[in-house]
Image (cartoon, rainbow, N blue to C red):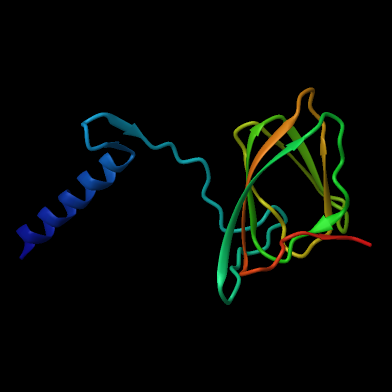
Length: 143
């Protein structure tokens, strides 16, 4: 029994170790680089998913130099990968700000009013992923 357990553990360790450097079907290496592992939003909230009919929406955003987005909030989870530029996101309820640069991963705050400003010298390019209830929008503008 002990031999089986040790063998299983060694096999699991070998599979785990090679997962980051797997091979495709032709034997060419595929390098997997973890970018982020998060359990909370930018403001420290636990990440919670919509409770019914989840729809995943994927978009790209390009924010011009000096542009400031209107004050808004997201009722559902939103994630963004910064492909280029520097973005300052301010929670207008608390005054706290975070600055994100090329290569950063953002887990946006849920249900809290915030706005973002491109503070860099080039456009901000984002890959944005929303998880919403099917048919819902994930941005509400403050009136």
